[in-house]
Amino acid sequence: MAILSELLELLSPFPAEQMEAWPGSTQVNSPQFDLPQCAEPID
Image (cartoon, rainbow, N blue to C red; front, top):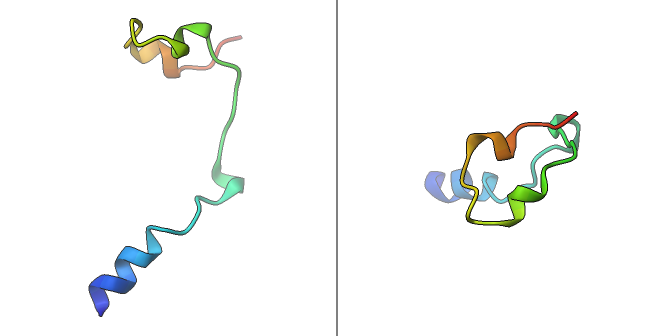
């Protein structure tokens, strides 16, 4: 049962206060651009 309780913890949502959001490039919509820069914030 310990394994089951550990797995159930993974089903809980990520806390909203720990989330970050920022505008992204239109390149994130294309698999052609598989670059780390796609996950960086744009100014």
